[in-house]
Length: 406
Image 1: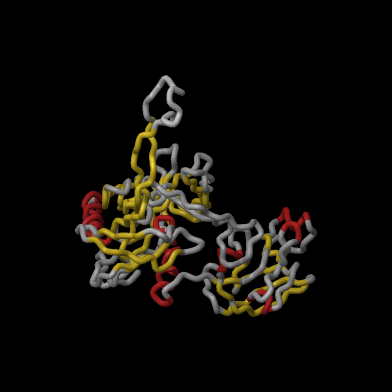
Image 2 (image 1 turned 90 degrees about the horizontal axis):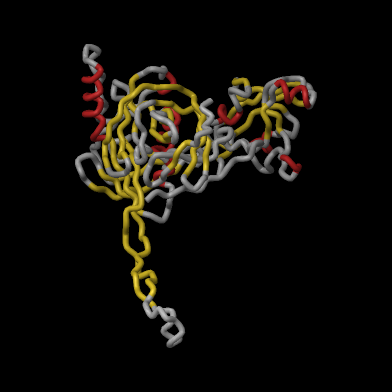
């Protein structure tokens, strides 16, 4: 049974709480959450105790794949979702028994009524171990529900109760914990160095029942943006994804996408419906900060600037007669109902004002391609940063201590 997960969309003019532009929410393949990409998709070290060693270059590709699977399989886990569900019983009732002779058809009609509840598996997904003391990385949508139980099965068939330590509010990532030590882990690659055409291996709990299913393919594309739809029609936009032709099936959600060195390059997250061999994974570099925060703070947090803005381009420059064609213009929301600067926020305390234009954030130029939302994701709450702004025709620098997005 698949559960669709409700998502929320962000406003076009964002409160910069490190929201990735347009990132609303959700995605694929777990049974615990069944998601597909729509036909109109806009395809536009960790250090552990046991790291995989590099595969000798003289091995054939087949031998490399076999070695990767052999080393990685003990690290990949199945995540099972269970909940109390109602039990119904069938009984018979004659609707005409109080009216003798009213009906020529004197026979009972089947009816159903609830008779208690029972614990039942309602879905599943995949995860992989990221620390020897039992931390597991998966997709947020696999463990989205808070009123159900999560159980982890390791490759050797052992069963562990799992606690969800943190769910990333903006990316489809989550971290679980099981009470087990001396576990093997996989090394995390640098996903910024990926190249189209690289051979990749995906491992996951396909269809929620075939654990550690292996598929092999290549990186078909990088920096893809897609919209994922649930069976109920709910959707979420995902950005900067890895596209692969390695089969990503329901239940693969949260499993690792590996290179031929046995390093994790991504987290499998979505598949395209109505297409052949189009799957997507979140680059592992996007998860590294989450992993570090959970280890250090026990939670995932994002910095909060506290402004509403629109990114400037040539068209906007000409339309409202600005002197620059880049930057983030601090502006009220449509209808003027919400302030441009959130009262009491980091931006407010730093003195930012409506109609200021943020030209640079800690030395990085703000453009359509390098948006403010994208840049701010590199920082953490309490970080002090310097903004170059344009105010009434004059450039100036403003120091800001970033807040925390609640």
